[in-house]
Image (cartoon, rainbow, N blue to C red; front, side, top):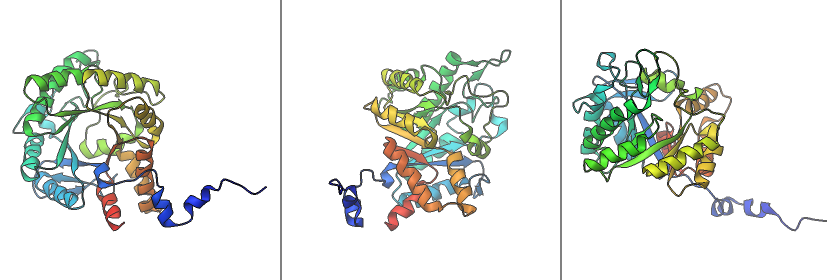
Length: 328
């Protein structure tokens, strides 16, 4: 008996395929992470991330201008701080004259309509390289002592002009703490995009190379999530919702599509995903060796992240993908 149902009828031409396409990517979906370094007029390629650069503030402004011309409207700068400015309490993170906050303010002056998402975690500024305060004797990451530091960091970023605060530290209770600090200081309009399910992943290596932000001792497994766990992400989601998060994030993305989907199914908040440095580097390395078509693989990966449920994607591919989308 010949088939009655023929799904191929909806695939028979490009026009029909486009008409019934369930998931679409646009530049509105992208948040472009950028690496910021000290100095002037420097653009230094990250060796483990071909095509991605560390920028001094002046060159970072130029990069944002190019990305805006391609339709990208949201950016997430990450700083590389001089070791001499680091201490165990990350005091430089709240310095309004420091590299990061001055650059955030400058971006908002020159591009008032773009969205700037800032990173709230101690590791770029910590002499220990951890996302929280480290007990000098035991080496334990002190959760509650870290909240005060994170709150002051978030407040300083809001004062500099941040539109979205991104707590990436995974300390318990930090969303509620930051929301309270912002609201008490007349920054109730500033959003919080919580790193709700940030896993202790092996895919962060190139990022840590770019910013020299790896822990000096130990690892981050006592605060970042176990890659084996999915239900735990839903517990974190429930807490972030209760504490006042405006958006939630899963990080990494590509190996955690099931988690993105589960989070999307359990919340009415916007869901974001971070297509991290190791995921970017894998595709670039395979493409350079001729093993995959880099452009097609890039677009398929981004589409899969959105299909899984991400409303927005932090991705180092943002500029390259925007150029592909512009070509149609």
